[in-house]
Length: 143
Image (cartoon, rainbow, N blue to C red; front, top):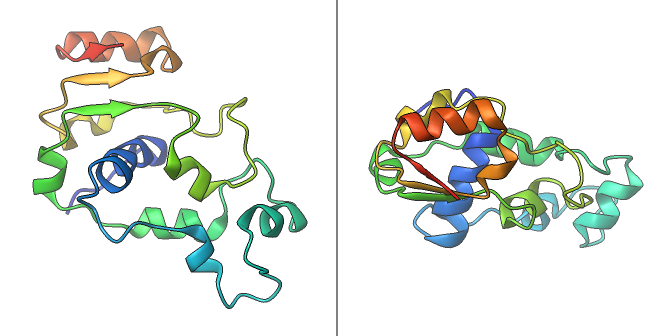
């Protein structure tokens, strides 16, 4: 199984496979994970806010996604990634987040080798010039 170095890059890959392609199953839902936790009334936003976890990745979500193994054959099928503040995976990780900070910024593209057939990255303007150069050097369209 693949080992990711950049957690936020992994989340973008998860977005594609789990929430867009629906090939990585089951779909993670923070509300399902929090069921049965003391003080959880069914709303992840309230739960996070009441615990001072606004604008942070919920520890339960981080643990889940860090441990999530993604088979190589699914990674090989990734041809496009989208970096957008409205990604479902971000809402599942940080229910109290508005997309206005760097919480989910990708710091490294060292994990590109894990998605060998990647051809296009949407929302690449959030990467910065150095990481954009990495994409273009590999022939990946940066839109």
